[in-house]
Amino acid sequence: MDKSLISVRGLSHRYNTQWAIRGISFDLPETGVYGLLGSNGAGKSTTMNIISGVLKQTEGEVIVNGISLNEDPIAAKKLIGFLPQHAPLHPDTTVQEYLSNCARLRKIPEKEVRNAVNEVMEKVSITHFEKRLIRNLSGGYKQRVGIAQAIIHKPAIIILDEPTNGLDPNQIMEVRKLVRDIAKERAVIFSTHILTEVHAICDHILMIDRGKLVFSGETREFDNYLQPDSLLVRLLAAPPVEQILQIAGITDAEALGGGEYRLKIGGSSRIAEQFIVECVSRNWRLETIHPEKTSLNDVFSELSNKNA
Ligand SMILES: Nc1ncnc2c1ncn2[C@@H]1O[C@H](COP(=O)(O)OP(=O)(O)OP(=O)(O)O)[C@@H](O)[C@H]1O
Image 1 (cartoon, protein in one colour):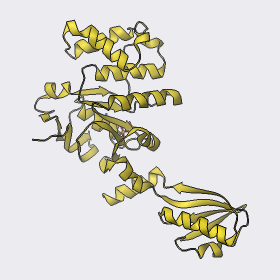
Image 2 (cartoon, rainbow, N blue to C red; image 1 turned 180 degrees about the vertical axis):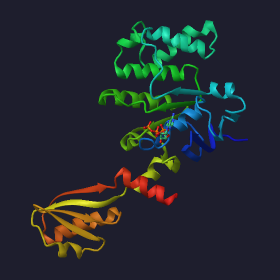
Image 3 (tube, protein in one colour; image 1 turned 90 degrees about the horizontal axis):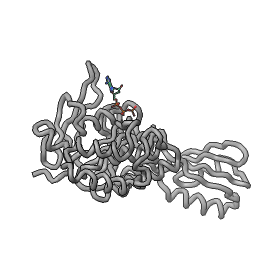
Image 4 (cartoon, rainbow, N blue to C red; image 1 turned 120 degrees about the horizontal axis):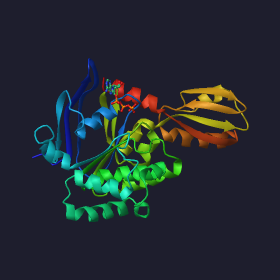
């Protein structure tokens, strides 16, 4: 018996003639935030729409807590909450009316609706706006209502499609905090194309590139691909490049002018330490030193080539 909260097997989807995703498989074994990372058009929304049961896949299957989404969609969908990229909010209803309607659509018994709505409003900290029309809420509060409708029936898995898109920095922080909080009791799949977002809140990363899953693992494992591969340094007593190249581990050095250099170090942080020691002993008067991280595009292409 499969113990995963969700198990995705060989998922593929074709729109007309073009494949949007091919052979995606992964398991979400436990609670926590799972970041679905991918650039625009990589296939994130397609994958999320299929898992949440709003799009029927061309091939493959999704098992939610042991229940096949194909074979028993009603039972499987009860275990899933979904906030699509464009939240399905009704601007002319109040927060309380809207969430009550969502509770009824989720088949919560009438006598429990009131409690369920109160509980979820408290959870997402929106009780003080319960009588406000949704159209009059800020973007961050609208997103809270969107998250509330996704969790009102207490699903085991929540799917959030780019929930911080279009929010200001404060609202982003608040939504992230809320997501971390609701992930204590359930698995949250959180899609984004922003690497720093993944770092800020995700425990695990699923990375999709051109429709294929190219990485699945813990966030710290992913960091191995983000090793600095060059250092930007500024030396007040600037030496010739040839002298810098004598230091073991520095594979290339480029003088940028004004005492600045870009040093290629091939991924080991110990070389930076060694360089600092050398600067002191050679009296080069090191003023600044910064690692230059591999860009997300480089990570995408490295992982894609590895999995090609
Ligand atoms: N309804 C559709 N009909 C045809 N092609 C589609 C449709 N929806 C998506 N696609 C295509 O499928 C591919 C994957 O799109 P998808 O929206 O799943 O990617 P995404 O990673 O969510 O991107 P974004 O962040 O831009 O939403 C893209 O090439 C896209 O153009």
